[in-house]
Image (tube, rainbow, N blue to C red):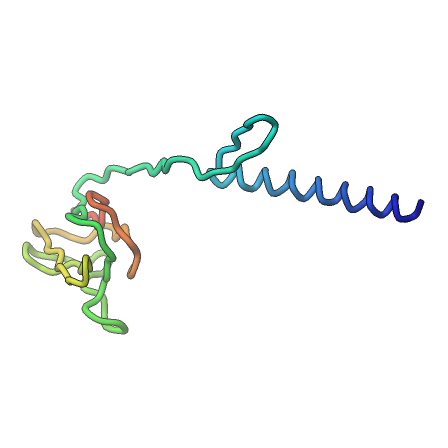
Length: 130
């Protein structure tokens, strides 16, 4: 009898844990699909929202962005810094090739929209220049 009670308690705790896990998965962009009473969880299609920034320079390629010429070196740019056409703003590494991203117009760095060593997508805004 005591064994039955401990089994019921264990089952109740497991069901509670599964319910909590299901809620966490749903909140983190997983979709629950019922198929003949079974619960299947799968990552939903990406719903990445591209925020439009006026005066933004966008990534011309997919790759990894670097804000300085080498590790531990000063960044190419800082927020509030004045830049001129042709200045290197950052580097994007794609297929082991380092591609400098050049400033397309003179202005002031309003906002840097990416972090060092982070992956970037084609067309993703990188920096806003006013």
